[in-house]
Image (spheres, rainbow, N blue to C red):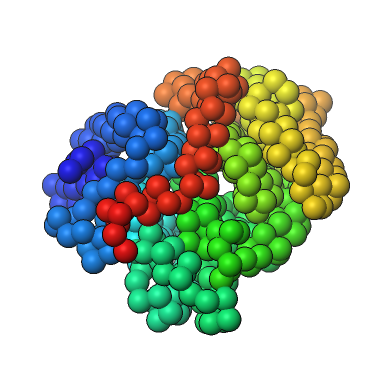
Length: 514
């Protein structure tokens, strides 16, 4: 068997407890091992992406037990792409956390960081629905600790709300899995697809209940309205490098929708026909609209970026909900773009908050204002979908794929108006934070010696270094995604074609046997 498939899970699973047990009191060594682990994960991700790019679906059977009886990990183009995205996102974030000192503001940051990577990579690679639940719980447990990293009553309150809401989602997940297992007798994804296709349409009432419950769980993870209420406060009050990493967590929900509802509950399956797209697309349209309005109305930069994440998920799910190869290819390109753009804006927001606070209002100019405003401008035009960056290409692909949709007019209207509102909201924030601040009068204080008014002391200017370099790494990712949009779209088109030919996945996992 190809052991590279399980390496993205095994590496952080070994490294995280090693950091806790051996390096607990040595922060410098934790940083060295953490960065080395992320670089190694990136190398593994590039390797398995190269292996999957040929179109072959590779299966890893734990304990050499064949599916559907044993646990299997499955590597195809989609799972390889998502693991690569996770590794590419993790590297600048861990470097930023080290450079900004966020990793020393609480305990066990690096261990929790790698447990989070283990859960995310496991969710992308598993071929079993129950183990998808297990990896969901692994990444959620790690995220609970990262959410409250650094302490504070506000952060703790948001963390408790985050835990409560996700525990509800986990409970629904178990109910959904129990229902599906009761009907099909299996939780292996490929085997579920075989069993569902054999069930007569008149006997599918309970199966449809399980499929709807499963979709609700994934929509909670993907922050689809009205199940999005946990995200703005949770992301805005979390340490912002952690919120940048959480940009991939909503994509886990989107990935799960794509995987399960093209493989087992696809639009061509008679038992669940019309189950998803009929209401997922309206929910996605409303999610985009609410996200754009939230961007316009936010009074705090971190909360504004959280609504950017919601708006980008709305655009992504509009494409996913059509369940066509062209729309799915556009969605997969947009996954890469929106993850990098959201993480970039969260790190820029952290730079702003460390220097002047997070209120979207004029203050005295902050240190490095010109450099940070340039980074904010790049993130803003990427998130809004303006040329020349990849956001424009991604939204153009989504619009083009929606031309033949039954409600194409509504889709185009919401995406275009939402983009305009997003531009206005981000321009307003940038103007108040960076431009108007230079028009603010200098604050003066009374000199204690001679009683004269003198300018108030200004905090020493932080020097550009590793933190700024890490942020520029995400900018470089967006630029490369734009320059190589052709090869990227070719890969996502082949991935979509593989997803809409589920018989190849089923044959690879089950070995041609039911």
